[in-house]
Length: 151
Image (cartoon, helix red, strand yellow):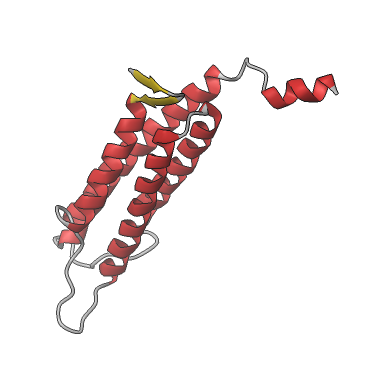
């Protein structure tokens, strides 16, 4: 399913990438947040949540840019960068930034689980999308290559 209006092609993967990014952005603050701050004590998982929120904002921004860019090669580059952000987001909770020590805390049971699910799906979708875009254009000559040969 491709919507083509004035060279703006919006594919299913564009909508999937944007939708999942927006859902994760909302979810990290509302549905599966990290443990709350209690008094003067700030848990380390609080900082993991802040970094995950910042990375999810970045994913939403590049997913919206991905949606309006007409060039498939640029879309493939955005897919690759988005997949890198998704992999980084997978490594944040519990690896790069520690979570609570208690295995029953919300950050370990909800936030970590939903981060793995969302980021794995986003990463898989973006890798597949980049592969398709690059595969479609692997046989085509770039317009810059044609102009250099004519000089």
